[in-house]
Amino acid sequence: MSQKTVLITGGTSGIGRACALAFGRAGYAVAVTGRDDARLAAAAQALAAAGIAHLAVQADVGDEAAAARAVEATVARFGRLDVLLNNAGISMRARFQDADLAVIKRLMQTNFFGTVFTTKFALPHLLASKGSIVGISSIAGYRGLPGRTGYSASKFAMNGFLEALRTELLPQGVHVLTAAPGFTASNIRAGALAADGAAQGESPRDEGAMMSSEAVADAILRAVAARRRTLVLTAQGKLTVFLNKWLPGLTDRLVLQHFQKEEAGEMQ
Image (tube, rainbow, N blue to C red):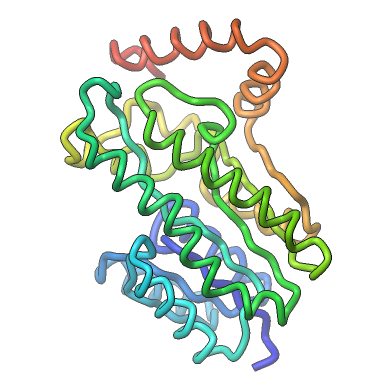
């Protein structure tokens, strides 16, 4: 019951699964959520193989009751909660004029409200442990990206929520980290929603040239240990945030060119 515990939403693949293994190897008991039973079983098997105390909870955290159940199950199993890692997320790839409004709603429900719901139910336990709340945001939460209006909106909302919450909780000793991984080799682009809400099923980018999920997980683990406020990863990500702050007009043009190349299938 004294072992530190982390709850990772969307912990069955990509950055979430890599974080589960990284935190587990660092000595945490690990609870992961996911919607797909087969992926949950595979994630649990990987954690067991690594000798990590673990719990897998079938839950869509965009559903308020499911988010509450995930937190309750974690605390019931391990007796405490020290880190909440809000990782569950969906992306999109479609121009706003073509996108069904249901796509925007779905992204907000999972990416933003999933973070809000899970954080709300976890907060009493994190206050008790003076623990950490982590939001896996995106460069799209600092700079709106064309073709990803719903995704950008959800990540901007997450960033604002976490910034306000960080300030509220300063006197109570709870740490809040906003992490923006940049382009990372994971399955989020392959699972991105098209204009009609169907999964794209493929990535427009060369995933092999990107930062690995394991490298991102190690950086997040170090940022939690150091109780950092923000974490922006990859040179491209840092440059985008910098240029958007100081040269927003130029950044508009550069981002548009990037998007046009992606639409034309020229991205590498």
